[in-house]
Length: 515
Image (tube, rainbow, N blue to C red):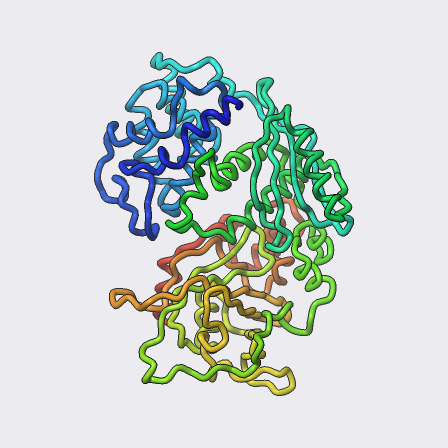
């Protein structure tokens, strides 16, 4: 067993989720009870408990083990939500530094290595101050400052071009490890399991993989990728995975498994390593070109190559096509449905998580989606459901009145899906997924937004393909259309539009004002 494997077993799930660790939050993110969110000043003793669980520096033999410990900490902390970054900056990094122990210095170095932005800079500066103060550290910790390089980045695919696996050997300071990303072609090309393989065992693992696939009748091709293309493919797969995943208390073990870090922790480590690779070159997109690069599911590819008249692939029809009856007053108050509305084809993902009464009409749901994404409701729309199409009544288009049907009639159960299309020219397609059916909380006003990611594109910019081109032009002041696009957006400079902006409270306010 390798030193990495030994330490993974030592730092398994039971140690990492032990009570007393202030990072582990079981429940909704807004109910975080860590010292920072509770308004209590953290103490070195609080963080000492966490360090004892995360870092056993005497047993560690290489920097990868510190990176894994930091990734596990950050993956668990991510369950808090967007508030975790200020927790790191304002509480954990300063308190680690205040302890001034070899473990604290190692953890700060690990956080700096696997995170980015302000968190990485703050942790690195704190680690350097501890080093300057004479706090000891193992000699191998300095290897974290060495550059990461990639060798043999590969894509394993079938003859149709659908990817089974991405793999590459990462090297730093003479040590090398292989990371393999199993792909799920039936889930928008999202990353499946992530594997960290000792470099010396990769050839054996590779041959076993190819042998199993070919024994199953799959003709696998292996293609060498440029580092920048490998980075793009990995980040797209991880983004798709992040878009589909939602941390739940019942599956917290997926973050830190009994025999080592889970996929969420390995994803953080892999993101850090691929950030050392060249940036993918920006380029003008077309529908077909983007499909070749980014569309991973067969159904989505067929939508691009041969789009139906409206809205893409329809939800799977039910055995009975008769629309179920509406809820009666005698049935009692309707429950609340938690739905995730995702803008189809957007990379990075753009989505909103809403809680709405199950008996909301589709006409009202249309208005809520418009408000949640900031659309102007100036174009036609349609809901594609297992029971037909609903929108503004139009016999020629086959659209029935959305005002006469409710959400729970067409999507009553967890896992049910709808397709909502807005603007038949730009073709903004939204996947609507029922994630939960909840009892009403008398203390909560519905509808409300409980999560999301990124700003919606400006309306009339040409759909997801046009939006990608718009972002490319805005990011390049030398582009001949740069000023023209700024004028169209009524902006003085590109900083006036932040594609990463999202504010759940502002969305909730808009939903409840109902304007």
